[in-house]
Length: 192
Image (tube, rainbow, N blue to C red; front, side):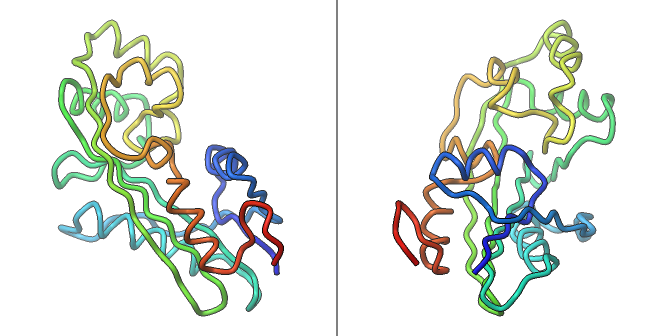
């Protein structure tokens, strides 16, 4: 049995290490992440995790873990910004209001699939143009859904959350540990 992390995200690998799980291999899938017309954020996020899990090559007994994190303002999906201008647009949209961060996890072993999504609510402080420009100058927005990562400099912009902190970072650990255990991955020093 090989445990494959289907993600190129260093944050997901670090989060797994917090619960003592180290992937045998990392294979980031390459899929089209374009939302369908009128697709809502939560179903979109779950679909992305499933499609990623399906796209990772693996053997029948291998365990593949994939996840997707989506930031949503109302029905609008905020993906990874393509440039600094889109990041600024996203942050201005979230400034002074609440938004949702959804992380869906999909674990596949052979043809079996286990999945779970976690929705957290995040409030971003009202950002001045000075704060916005200072954050954008850090470059921390790159490669992050919604254009920010709560675990980095943007943490100073987030006065309140309700939900899973690790889910907001990119992998809800309690739920992921349960899914891994269900899929047959040893946890907490268990022997398979």
